[in-house]
Every structure is written in structure tokens, then in C-alpha cells.
Length: 194
Image (cartoon, rainbow, N blue to C red; front, side, top):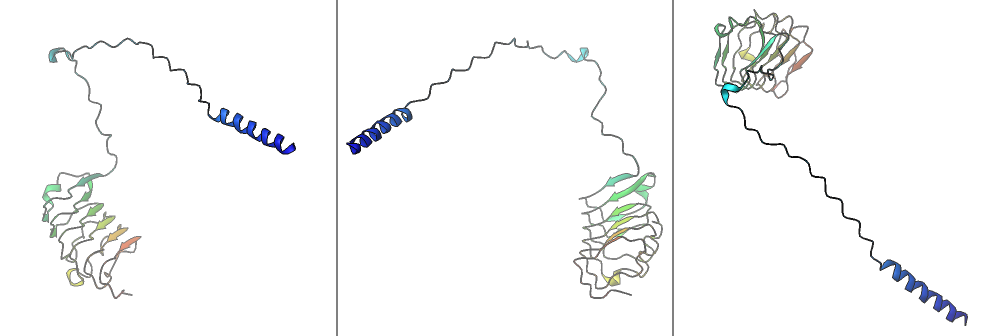
């Protein structure tokens, strides 16, 4: 009799569980539609003679300090002093990705001449650039014989010199003492001068 009661209890429990699990959840009440709002009326733009003049507000902020100049990705082959004669505040020039083969003396603080075809820098080429702090000459065609012994000697304020991706076999001589960053990677250097 105990087995019958246990079987009966198990059967009732299974039926109750089946009834509970087979029930569908109550459907939720549909959300109330939003209240109708008043649509703005369409008003056409006034004719040009009724427009009031407005001050432009999208001017870039003024540049403080030395003025930069980007001449990248052009076909410049020679850089001379004449175009920069009246640009007395110009101190940073980026001339990367050109076809530069020759640069005249200038007074810049930053000079980027990377990705060009510069193959020779004579001694004293940077003699009048005592304010130059950054000189970027990477990805050119500079070799040891193409640079004079005193090419960088007069650059007293130079802190960064990038000569990476050229065909140098020796580290350039007479690097200024103030250099904090010197990039010579991707060359064929096998000798460091003492």
C-alpha cells in the first residue's frame, strides 16, 4: 500500500508541475500611444534681401607661437630663400614627400625634409640655421660621402636629428652636443666614431 501511495503522490506531483509549466504568461498591457504633439509649422527661408548679416563663428583659433607651414606631398625640387623672405614669423616647415634635391639656407626651428631625393648636403648648408631644433631627413638618398664633416656642426640648438632610412655606413661626425634624439635606423652603419 505504501508503494501505491508513493506512486499516487508522484503522479499528482507530475500533473501539478505539468499544469504549472504549461501555463502561458499573462500578456502585458500594450503601451499607451504617445500623446499627440503639435507639429511645428513650416516656414520658408526669407528671401536674400531680408537676411541679416551674421559674423562667421567657425574661424579656427589663432595660432600662438611660431607659425607652421606644411608643403607636404607636392612636386617641389629646390627650396630657395625667396619664397620665405616676407614670412618673418614662419619657423616650422614640413616639406615631406616632395622631390627636393637642394635646400638653400633658411632660419627655421623645425625643418622636415623626409621622403625626398636629397642626396648631398654640403658643409655649412645649415650654417645660418642656429635656431633649428628639429631636422628630419629620413627616407632620402644620403650617404657618407654626400655629407661634409661639419654639416651639423653649427646647429647649436638642435635636439632631434632624423637620418633614418638613408644609405649611411658611418654615424655622422660632429653631431651637436645638445642632441637628445638621434635616429639612424635602417641604414648600413657599421662604425660609430669616437
